[in-house]
Amino acid sequence: MQRTELINLIKRKRSLLCVGLDSDITKLPACVMQSEDPIFEFNKAIIDATLPFAVAYKPNLAFYESNGIKGMMSLQKTMAYLNAKSSECFTIADAKRGDIGNTSEQYAKAFLSTEGDFNFDAMTIAPYMGEDSVKPFTIYPNKWVILLALTSNKGATDFQFTEDKAGLRLFENVIIKSQQWATEGNMMFVCGATQATMFKGIRRIAPKHFLLVPGVGAQGGSLEEVCDNGLIDDYGLLINSSRGIIFADKTEDFAKVAAEKAAEIQDEMLNYL
Image (cartoon, rainbow, N blue to C red; front, side, top):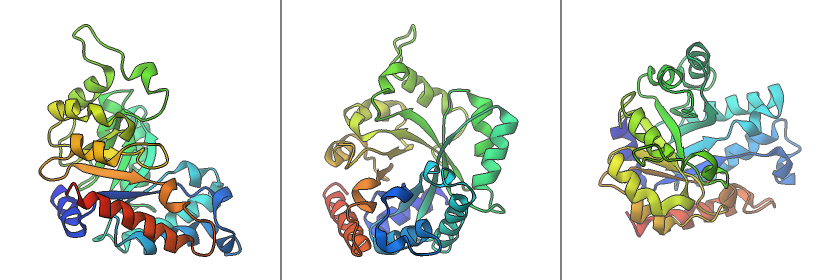
């Protein structure tokens, strides 16, 4: 999906919402567990219920890989279902890959190639190994790399705030340096919602790039702070909520409740859009 298409999708749906499909099979409602493929049936119901309110979906690959071949088949079916709705949503492989060049080439081929089994629009990348580990993900037309920059987890302080001699913190160096590898038309940055007060500083060094913002909802991030500090003229934000939507209810009404939660978030977003 091109940047202009993503912006137009946000404008049309009046939403910045990305629904995280962290479909942990141990947490699925009992009503889907008797189906042939519980994870796919769950995902399909969530997608159908939330599509009017969401502009993006982000399967976290750990919850599929941990179920072996069956899990990857569930992911493939989920992506086939989402790709059939490609004009209605942007898709992100939350994979956090990144390795030496030839290995990254294979990761990129696996998840971004239009000829592969998944055909995601974007993929999260760990940039620690530098340019040659990121570049292979940038060669696919209309596909995006989403670099980890400033995360919401407790351990973020272990490395991301380390300063160099010029006083730049590591996450700032990642954002600045990586802009030599790709543009705002095919690169985003992961910036956690619990760090939203720092987004104004991020906007000084990345004024046009989209930010993928996890951590709103169950992790305690403030939607108001994220929007106040991170929104730009053409939006520039995808705000993810996972557990707060997909596991809001475990009865047969789980999809209905997920839709209600997604609608609540989208309605709150209207205050800032």
